Length: 160
Image (cartoon, rainbow, N blue to C red; front, side, top):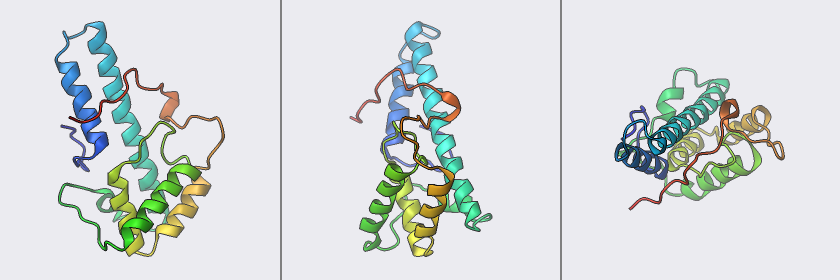
C-alpha cells in the first residue's frame, strides 16, 4: 500500500496499489517492470504535486499550522455534516473544471472531498476556490502535469 501520510482506501490508492502488484509480478528490470515502475513514480509525483498545491492554498488562507492536518484523510475520516456532502462535491467538481489544481487526466479523489467538507465547516471553501482560481487558472490546451511529465503508460486498472 502507499506510504504517504494521508493514506486512504480511495480509488487513487487502489490504482497505485494495483500498479505495484502488477509490477512486482514482472521480472525485475524487464521492459514491463521498468514501464510500470515509471508509472508508479509518475503517479506518486502527481499526487505529491496536487497535495502541495492544496497545501499552498491552505497556507495562503492562513492555515499554516493546520494545513497538514486538514489534508490528512484516513479510513477513519468522516464527513462533518451529511448536509455538506452535496456542496462539497459541487465545489470539488468546480475546482476540477475551472482550475488547474488537478492535472487534466486526474480522476477526482475522494480524499479531497473530505478536505472540502472541512473547509465548508470552517467557512473557507469559497475563499479556497477563489485563491485556487487565481493561483491555478484553467488554461485551454495546457497540460497541468507537474514538471512536464508524460501520461501514464498503462491505464489504471479498476479495483477488483
